[in-house]
Length: 233
Image 1: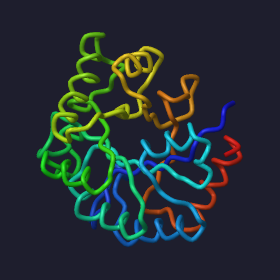
Image 2 (image 1 turned 180 degrees about the horizontal axis):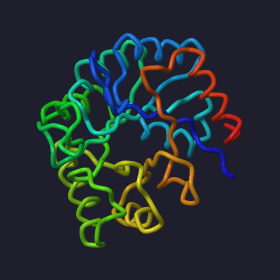
Image 3 (image 1 turned 135 degrees about the horizontal axis):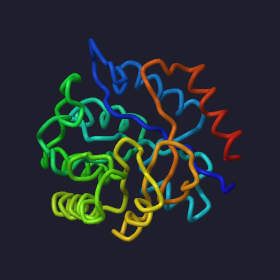
Image 4 (image 1 turned 90 degrees about the horizontal axis):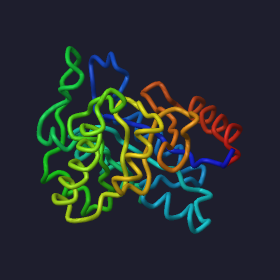
């Protein structure tokens, strides 16, 4: 199978007391993870930069860094840490929840999301803003009309905010099938991120490697080696 780039999947980076969904990494752990990449001569980049480098054949030491949902701590914790290493990243924003919270995680800890000003700020700092749908539904459960709306309305809304083309998409919950891949391509996205390897794996269903707060140096190395063995990259 065609080699796939190493893409790391994050959500939130902040201090926490309770994290039942395992979506939060502490700032100290995140800083250590970035240092681990840098010490190995790897550079964390946005998906936009990674995909362009792959087309040019220059992606050998690049690692995609992605952050799902658009949590407010992307501004306060993630971007400053990235900039210290001259890294970039992609944040996939739920366009219909700007300035709100993770309502789709009902019954779990509430996490605030970025607002429009935050998005413009991180875009000016060199981060890529991608789409994560309008309201974070499982796309495989939607009608065709609903699916198209989640893909196209989120893209248009985010493009208006950051005054730039939004070329990347991320499937909520990682739920994706052939219909969703075709719809993402048809909506004008250059690439789309999934979670798991599947029969749909390709530019519009890119697998990613989950990174959590337990991932210290040994676990990071194991995940890096597993990716290289699986994909030959």
